[in-house]
Length: 231
Length: 134
Image (cartoon, rainbow over all chains, first blue to last red; front, top):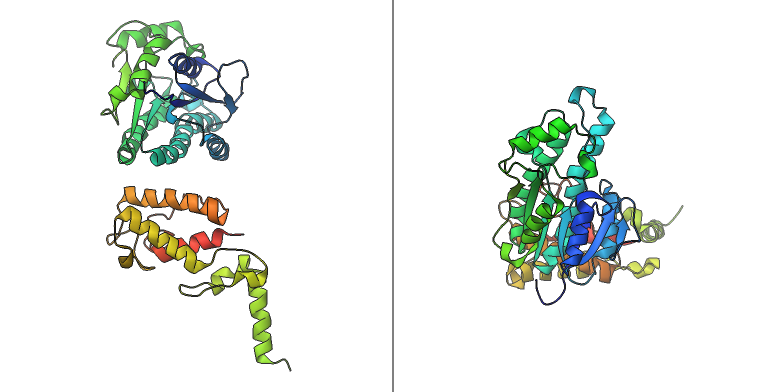
């Protein structure tokens, strides 16, 4: 890490992978600002209330944090899923999943991109899912939203390269979080069986890749999707 | 019957007093408004145009004497690369916040439209900034 502390903004910081990313970044010495729909006061870093699917909330939140010292990175970890067939998924649920996973990522990237373009340096890491390359049955809407995140990340990386900002995506297989609590065990096993490394990943497996992408060592890595577990 | 000049003067006064609604009718390149007549303190359009010109010159690495109101910012004849346009907009966002005391939200669906974009040339961008003022 650089001598002066760098600050990383993490969305979805109240639970699951987002909370772990925020905790791990804090433990690694980064300044951390969390965003979550439900703010918390029990963390050793500030967590602001923000529904990332609401562009006005995102704009207001980024306005309030844009002067934070050393603002350097964004980890978009806010995400929701709904195990359901497309034919039985309500339109409102589709909109909510795309709103949080894809539009939320885009809103936060645009807001953070303006800040980092000023600084002429920075890192953006968007969380996707191994369900995209595996085209999981029963998760088509979730897969579509995350496939959008991957495509967006690759194209946005080209826009931000001019400003010394890298944009990448990390795509984990099943990790033991609330996100997969309603997924049947046999489906989790099948998914793990489809990975190159056939074991369930851990939250630290994800953080290790995110940590690398946030680091100076990843300065020449942009527009990439890292599949945790391999697809 | 009302004197024509007096009528025009009153109409002009109404325009200035309510210029937030009317500015598009009275602002054109080269016309210097005197908004203090309306009691509203704003930066005039010429000053904003000069500020946009200097920003385009700086970030576009163009001699300032080669930048005018007609300098295109988008399209095949554009004076700026996309990176430079973003730098200009970041600079003008700061200018708008500090000097005009308004928020300059640069997102627009017509950003790349040669006929409708507020970024089509220096003048259109300057007029947009001017109109943001209360």
